[in-house]
Image (cartoon, rainbow, N blue to C red; front, side, top):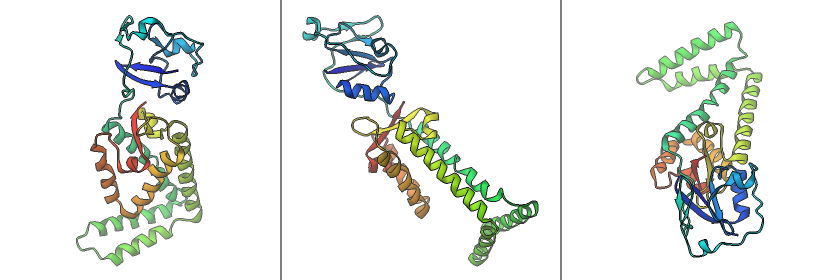
Length: 260
């Protein structure tokens, strides 16, 4: 069975029934999308055919003569001809949306830095604040002595108790787990859920597995950013201005980001 879809005056297909149900389950296809296949006399909302369920199990249909002759079908609000070529049903996420999603995801890591100082006593907080002030003043000083900077930084790091390091790494692990789970389930990190965009395969617009959606796109580039920040971020981001708005990590994972 060949199934065609339409949304916002754009047609897509044909899809198999299995592909349709996969896209419906991942919310890439909506119940409000119009659908047509052989045996139907007009385009209908998918939710009308599924009775509000996220799976479509059609009975047997016989194609009407009108569609066999490629006749145009008119609905109350739209006029469509039987689709002949595959078109994009989804639209690429805008650059501002992607930037906002990235900012949200980055902000989620900030609490990890506060965890390190959460175990300080009042006197230790004062001591750490003084060291931090000295460090910032040294950084802003022209021709600052690297040895002084390193000594101040070492004193600050040595103040953190083991409990603080354990709590911080536990927070980072939990955040990574949550992000990985969400991306594996829906192709969306927390930031992408908020901005209503998602990661899909660059060619088929189908959901991608955890390896491509999270490990290649996120974990690998987190490691690279630690080694070569900010150069790696600049190189990665400049690719977004291409036709498919794919960053370097999108190209590596063969993914793209679309509107939900």
